[in-house]
Image (tube, rainbow, N blue to C red):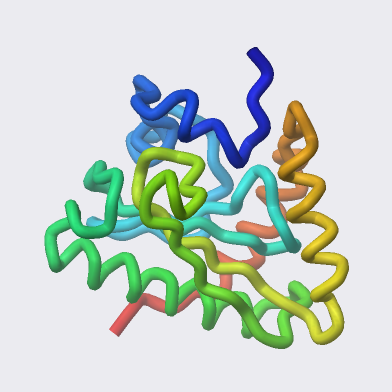
Length: 164
């Protein structure tokens, strides 16, 4: 069965193994921007904009409320560090969105808590909306080229600062 990205979580609620757990463990490829003892930040393979980063806790949890308070704090702190790196990088970023979908009714597509950090440009609203609609109707999502993601991750990793 071909399932659009938005509906994968609903059809495959217990993906084994969890792709984000595989990335955190180093068993699946990722373009890592930042990592510490509690979180890993890497570029989304289906980016809404260049530099679109996911911040993922190392501890597996489907919903935010399942995370320990220290992991919730690290998730937010990691997102702030990535946001600062995006603003300091050469990627186009006037402002940004932080987005977390907490459960399938909120359109969470991977059953592992994660926060999206999406750089935005003035006037990109229609382009971003068109991209999101395309994600809804495209039956098979084609990942972004790994070389492009790796280059963007390297640029962000060069300017990311440890959290305070």
